[in-house]
Image (tube, rainbow, N blue to C red; front, side):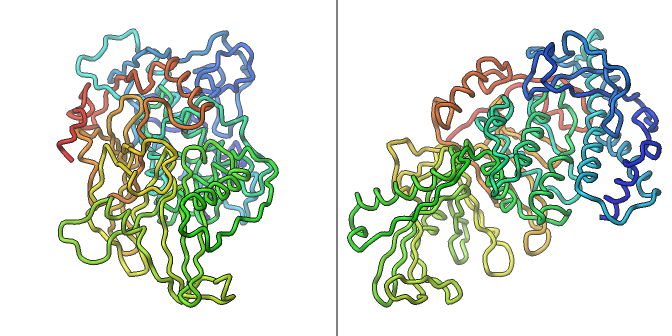
Length: 563
């Protein structure tokens, strides 16, 4: 907090903060740029509603622009099919340079007086200014790249696929970075944000939401990641700031649980984009003794629960990620059986208890999750017939699964320490028909597209988070370790004992989600040359990356015999 106050005091005075052109830079002079909002009528709007004008409106670190307001008739935007040639003279601003530049700002901040209190408005100014500074660094690289296109193309250049960009660790934020890399790899939801379709769904009046803040900062991260100019790792400063304001538990820089953050993010995006303005209240239906052994009655009861839920929760997030559990409770005293249904967006799978020499499988974990259990004394159930708390028998079944199935492997329980049991899970062809109560006439075969890994270094969730995800631009797998990105040669290599959260998508020849979203994705695929059907690669030179991996134009395909 002391560092934050120091930075605020510096940014509050333009005289105290060095401008981009005043900071010592060993190699490449900075060229700043401004992002022009889409209300400029003469601007052709690229993805995300922002156009790039290098050297037209120099943007200072405090977010202000110079007196020059000249705007060209056409934005200097990289054309869709254009490969960006990165010569040695262009690849000058590296990650270390970015750290040096931010270090100059931090050093100035540490030597300046710090006020005791920082209000909300000025806190926003701090993060926005630092985010603008990060953008100016990227802008310098893009501008220099544009000037170098006429030079000879390097013979040993490597190819980077659009969207394979790392995220800078801001200080114990690996949990956030890995979850973001996985959820943003969900094509339908990403396109919904990239095309700006989410903006008309923002619900600023929802008391359970955040006034659209979480949706906006998430959308900004996606636009930055999938921009053709995105070459170096991005620093998600504005997102982290917005997250901290939305949830105080994520405000600092302590180690957090990636699954807990992911669950919050999904819920926050849903509430910010909930199309229901006035939520009606309806009493949930009650099951009776005749319902228990009547399959049709159970199905009708489930439909009633789901209809009530959807009358209060209607968003693209729920359309893609929401499934339902069926929970059965049985009183040990009077024999009363009660059936209810509850939604989930992250399915938690329990690992089998006891030593397992050869590990276990995801199928066995799902079976373990559906086993009958007796509730503990401190988690007793209120029996409506006995009018008493009872240690009831409880059974949880998966009633429906969503198009996008997120599975959390419960490696932490009430016991001390982490369960590092190896869980074997399919990369392709997860068939759930034997685990689901209601198929709804759909195929229930799922394919993996992302994994959050956790490597424990200390007891109780402290450790390293990484992500592996399939990029929907080229359908290849990449590993994300904060700012470091590497290609995975085979899909089977994603199966490790560190797997913590699995991301599956239902197999379908059409885009997933409701018809409206399907149409948005179809249009995007046909108009975007970097869609999942036509890879779009950007040529770069980087001595830091593994050339043997990045240089592969074609990676090995999926072979079911490997799994």
